[in-house]
Amino acid sequence: MSLGITILNILHVGLSLIGIIAGLLVLFGFLTSTRLDGWTKVFLGTTIATSVTGFMYPFHKFLPSHAFGIISLIVLPIAIYARYPKRLAGGWRRTFVITSTVALYLNVFVLVAQIFDKVPALHALAPAQSEPPSLITELANLALFIVLGIFAAIKFRVEAVQPA
Image 1: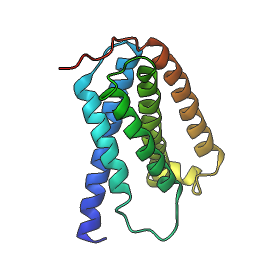
Image 2 (image 1 turned 30 degrees about the horizontal axis):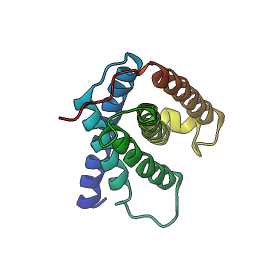
Image 3 (image 1 turned 60 degrees about the vertical axis):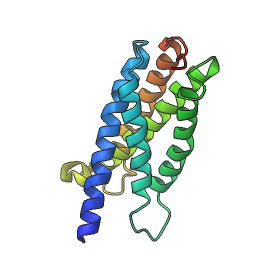
C-alpha cells in the first residue's frame, strides 16, 4: 500500500468516525429537543469530507459505497440549507432532521459493512456480505434509524434559529 493511500485511509476513516460520533450526538439532541450547534457543524463538515475523500480512492467499477457517497452529497447540502439559510423555520426543521438522519445512517451502514469486511470473525460469517448475518445486521440498522428518525422528527421542536 502506498504512503498516499495510507494517509488517505487514516484521513477518511478518522473523518468518518468523528462524523458518526458527532452525528449520534446530534441525533440524541433531536430526540431530546436540544440544539447542539457545535456538534452539528462537526457532523455536517466531517460527513461531507468523508464522502468527498471516499471518491479519492482509485476504483475500476461503481460500488455501493459510491452510490451512498452520492446520496450523502445530495442530502447534506439540503440539511445545510435547512439549518443555516432557512434557520429550521417551518417544514425546514423536519427536513433538517430527516436529511441529517439519512446522512448519519449512510455512514453507519458503511461502517457496519467495513466491520464485516475487516473483522476476521465477522468476515468468516459473511464473506460476500450477502449472507444472513450481514443482511440481518444491516436490516436491523435500517429499522433502528427509521424508528429513531421518526421519533427525532416528532420530538425536535426547538424554535427557529434567529439571525445573528
